[in-house]
Image (cartoon, rainbow, N blue to C red; front, side, top):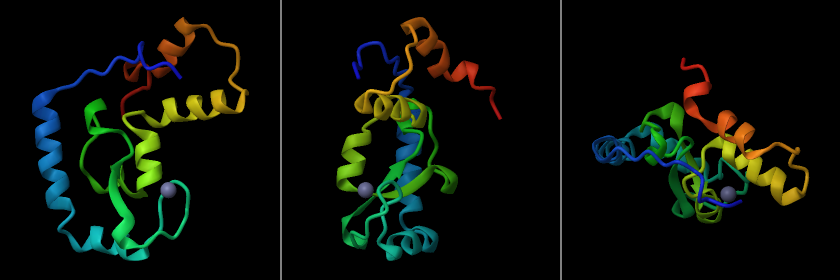
Length: 121
Ligand SMILES: [Zn+2]
């Protein structure tokens, strides 16, 4: 999928704050328990705790927060494949890779992907 039209509204203060919170979250018993399971949230493979990284489901650069509901253990392959896509964009990328992406024009896609249209809360 072309990334050029993805609008990454990066808020530096938000990113710095959430990255610091992520570091703190990594020290918690909760996160250690997630790692202890050794399973990647995305592909479900048992890769072992040492191969898991903390992944933000909604990327910090896209407004995601470092809270338990938004961080999951991910293997390096999945973490790199995901980069800074939101879950909605990932679904679209997967569909496109499978050749089953419905025929939407770019305007429809942008409306669908705009967080302002998701209905906050
Ligand atoms: Zn994985």
